[in-house]
Image (cartoon, rainbow, N blue to C red; front, side, top):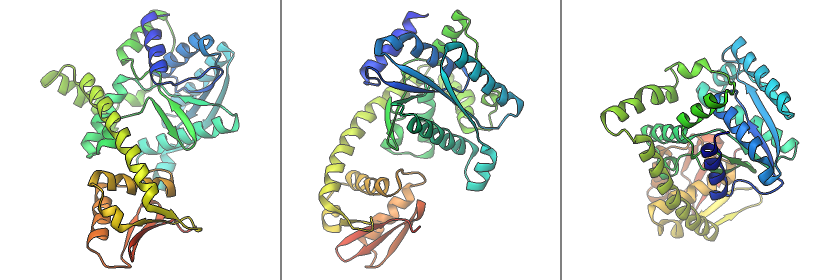
Length: 336
């Protein structure tokens, strides 16, 4: 097994404290080269941490018989390695249509919900996914195009707490080319997802068209530049988040109904960067994430606090209302 690849993975695990001894790990296995390489690497180093490894595969039902073949491949691979596999089918095209979201977003949401459920039901400590340096660069560029702020441009965290679970990315310091070389050198079988070749999806457009254009016309090291930028921003964002979290605790109260009130006077005294994070802290506490919260929503909240009269309301995604009352703004829980 390629020592350089394994050592990079070992280094990433150590640097970001991804694993502890005797951890159990659920590997998100699509059947593609990245996730198959991740599985082989974790099996190779499992004695380092005395790991117990499981596999999770979800069929998104995009590609008919091809995706059924992916599931069979993952089940066969698990059996050959003596590992337990959890598999599930989800009709992502139908779910995307019902929720009015893109197929990409629906697939991501359903995939992680499946991973979280399997991990909870089986008392698994960590969830490992196969994102590489290339995926990180693509993610940062996609978020830049959408106009993300610092929290978006920090990219994917090597270790991320999500809904009470811990997601780790051991391949975050490895390039896609290194994965491909490793797979080829070792003769490891994997599945090719034909949808990755279609440029109808945003990520594929970035991967196959935009990044090659930037490499050719502007900077051949654009991926490295984007990844380094994300790492720098992550350090600054972490500091601001910790600082803002302390401020949020000082100036906020939660009532018996679960609504959160924030003192307007104290809120106004904070810099804009801190005010934004205070709002995000309240939203995370009420709905668990910041999905669909946009810059326009933030501007409406600023206007509510600074200019609108008492009893004015701003509607936010997820059924959350923010109401201005005398001396406070109240983040109201969604009505059930």
